[in-house]
Every structure is written in structure tokens, then in C-alpha cells.
Image (cartoon, rainbow, N blue to C red; front, top):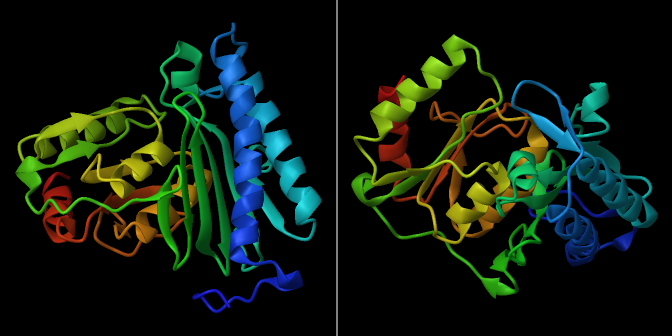
Amino acid sequence: MAQNGWTPINVFTLEEFLSVAVDAAKKAGELIRNGFYQTKHVEHKSQVDLVTETDKACEDLIFNHLKQHFPSHKFIGEETTAACGVTELTDEPTWIVDPLDGTTNFVHGFPFVCVSIGLTLGKVPTVGVVYNPIIDELFTGIEGKGAFLNGKPIKVSSQSELVKSPLATGAGTKRDKLTVDTCTNKINSLLFKVRSLRMSGSCALNLCGIACGRLDLFYELGYGGPWDVAGGALIVKEAGGVLFDPSGADFDITSQRIAASNPLLKDAFIEALQQSK
């Protein structure tokens, strides 16, 4: 039985769920890797939010692969179900997929892109896979079993001082003056309290950066949806990290608000975030 009290049906183990998800991520990764060096056909969801043929092809591939193995499960994907307004998360086993996180990076040939796949059981992230096919880094996690990078265990950093901590965040996809001013004012305040700032364009990979100790602090407001965090959130938790709402409240996978750090930095980070409003 999984630690959240949900018993896998049809005697599938969490390891089997992970294995199928890894296979799907690697197959999609091949598409991304091939498309990365070719001319892209780009559509605009908004002024700065992009989608390509590769996003759509990867999501189709991932969902077809997962549905072959788990036809009774629910599915939420950025380019299909979410585009049709279907994002309700239930207690049923649900695969939450971002087929290509970092699409703008992909379009511009910046190698910070990934496939993100998360499985929730009882609304709790239970299996996570994040794969960057350009630099061939595979992050994985299973609830209660730890987090791994290319098969080797990873842990969050042991840094305890904000001033020595690199911070990652994102600017979101809205460019109205109020949103931009709020974003830049918050960053301006935080820059006086942390070591440096990173804005690398992938929520999922930023979470994995926390998990493996490359980053100490991460927050983002107004990202696309649960597909951006479902895989990475589980990996952070299994690497010993903490997830929370930037306000200090509990993390809600459906809220489009997330912060992550190691446990030693959490309280100071929340205080800094609250003071940066």
C-alpha cells in the first residue's frame, strides 16, 4: 500500500508505474532531441507562451503509451485536456503530463527543456519523472523510496543561510503592467537577501535543481498548471526538500503557486517572500 493510503489496483506496484512513465518520457525525449536541432513551427498561446508541433506530438505519444498500460486511469495534459478546460483533479489515479516544459527554450535552442510526468493517487503526487533529453538527465522519484538522477540517489542541499543561496524563479506568461511590476518588485526585494538569481525557463527542472542541491530556493507564481509541478514536486519531497505556498501555507498542486527549498531555509525563505510583497 502506498503511504497515502491508496492501494494500486490490478496489483501494479509503484515501481511498475515508474518504469512505464520512464519509458514514455524517453520516447518523448527522442522527439524533443530530434526536433531541437530543426526548424520549429511555433504557435502563440499568448504574447510569450508558445507551443510547437513537438509539444503536441510528445503529449500524444506519452498518453498513448500510458493508456496502453493503464486504460482506466485519468489523464491531465497541458496541450490536450487542459486546452479543453479539463483540469479537475480527482482521487482517481491520474497522470499529469507536461510533454515539453521549457517550450520557449526549445524554440530558441536553449537546452533547458524536459518531459514532466507525475502520477497522483488520492490527489497526492506519488510517482515523478522529469527528463531532459538534450543533456540526458533523468530525475525520478517514488513516494517513500527516494529521488534519483540517472539512477543515483540525490538530496537537497544543507545550506542554512539565505545570503549564500541561489534563487530560481520565473516571470510567468502575462505581460500586463501590474503583473510585471509585482514580479520585478518581488525579485528586487529578494535580491538583497540571496546570493544570486536564476530564471531558466522550466518549472519542472527548477524543482529538480532543488532536489539535487544545484539550487537552494525556488518559487513561482502563475505558472501554467499542475503539469508544471506534478513530477518535480514528488522528486523534491523524496530528496528531503519541502514544498509550500509562497505565503507560507501548505502547497496545493492545483493553485499555480509554489515554493521549494531545503528544510533549513524554509522559515527564512517564507519570511523573505512575505516581506517582498
